[in-house]
Length: 295
Length: 302
Image 1 (cartoon, chains in turn brown, purple):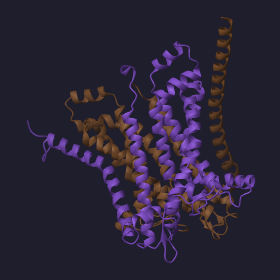
Image 2 (cartoon, chains in turn orange, green):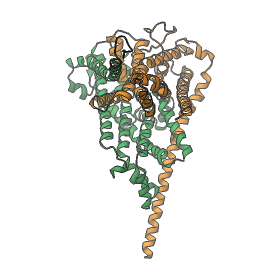
Image 3 (tube, each protein chain N blue to C red):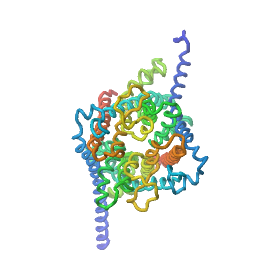
Image 4 (cartoon, chains in turn blue, green):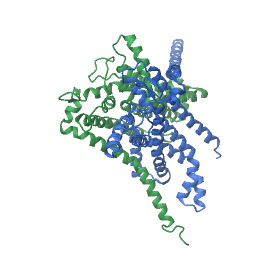
């Protein structure tokens, strides 16, 4: 009996030791993640903050891109992401309305859902090839804001569809029933009841996808972005500079990689601040809509 | 009763609207079809001159030489190696993180860690690639005395940072979906927290975790900017993890600018795009299959 007790005691000690080791490693993983994120952001902020000034944000590059600012790249990224949203938002919301309001479970809907999933999994460089082959060459748009926006729009389409579908589905069923009971048609119910209620959810998802579009590089490399231009685009058929591509070019190509380091850090800092602000906007929108929810 | 519209009855109008939305839902299908069409249209002409076997298994990738060589085997190996190593680094970290957010963390930390994961997920790949170039590369170069810090291990480290958010957040969902009764039953039998998590909750969420890992790998293999900036770019089969490689997406992105339109090199890059597309498609289909086939039931399936 005594030996059994003793045995049981050591066994349970070992069991609790294992638990402790496990919990320590779980906590360690969280700390490690926080450390990595702080290291990346801290490093970029510390090195980039010195480059940021009014001139950097508002003038085009000068002297073989070793001096001057990044204004054309900021403007280009703005056009491209707005264009992508213009393309993807109406189509995505319409597709989500079908999936959430009209579709009945069946093979057609299952097929559409599988295809949307597949589209979400296509690598960004393949989207770039598609944009090049289809928009730039086949449709003859050339390397332009239009081709780049359409390509980026295709990339964020699946995200917008699933975010919008979720937002539409979270509108209480009783709202629809009340409206339909008043003799209002289904489309009018969607238009006047469902969409206004789902709007903030749809906006949150769309804003997050804009953040993604702003940071994409590979898809715009062959479809919209240009190495260097001092002029702002005048039409949607012009090429533009874009922030992510500008960073890539400064960091990898050319003879002045070391001399332009401060500009690179500055451009990276501007890009992540932009994306950070977009994401904060989305989070604020989510908080705001939750606070105004009265059901 | 008079119809309230001059041209259509209300029913017809509703039916047209429904058709319109169905059409919009099919646009995603159309885009996917167009992607396939563009890839085939751009890539198939290559196979009039180069046969598929020597394209996929050829050891030499010299597209600009005379005569050019279009063997992408080293590129495929490059992609597979960085994907495998980055998955090996990311999976333990992500699962521990998911356990932290789903089971271990106190409430106030749970959301903080989730926000940190979202921050990491929102970082553009070009920024991570830049970080790899200016921070990780010099560290690797100095500590291992290498000619260049742009190599397999650097690319794998950065890629693993990229896929951690994907794997961690999907695994977190999977862990949360395990019915509470399992956990309670395990504690009631006297199991420790470790035993409950390791032998009850994680096995219960295994298919979800597996799906998360596959989707993370699909993301890693298709990621372009990181491997373009930090993998080094040598188109040969590597001998150690400190060698540089040229994964498929890096090849496409680096060479498309110089490849003359409708030349063999151009077609070859589209053909690489086809290979990449089908590999990621296969990963996604497997993930989809696993998550459907092994969907855990709730307590009703006990």
